[in-house]
Length: 81
Image (cartoon, rainbow, N blue to C red; front, side, top):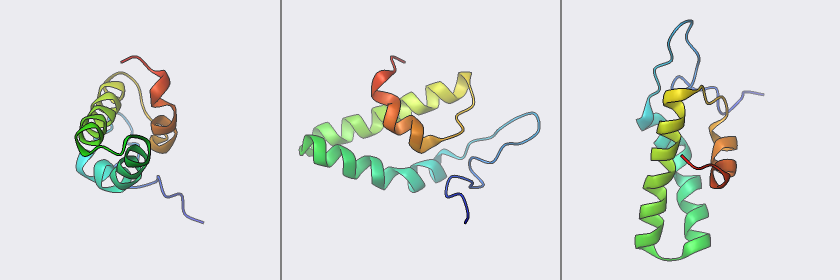
């Protein structure tokens, strides 16, 4: 079984990892959007939280490797970034 998180966007390189954020958002965005919609049910609030989710992930990725984007999404409410 193939790991769905093992994509070209997240595959580690020897010394440097170049993250393709377009791929991350395309892969993870629908799940984030649907979860936010179920929780908030207001388009403006969902749009704002959707953007903040990926900004927080981007900030985290600048300081440490993120090996599991889905795990980060589930746990991101506990982080103050």
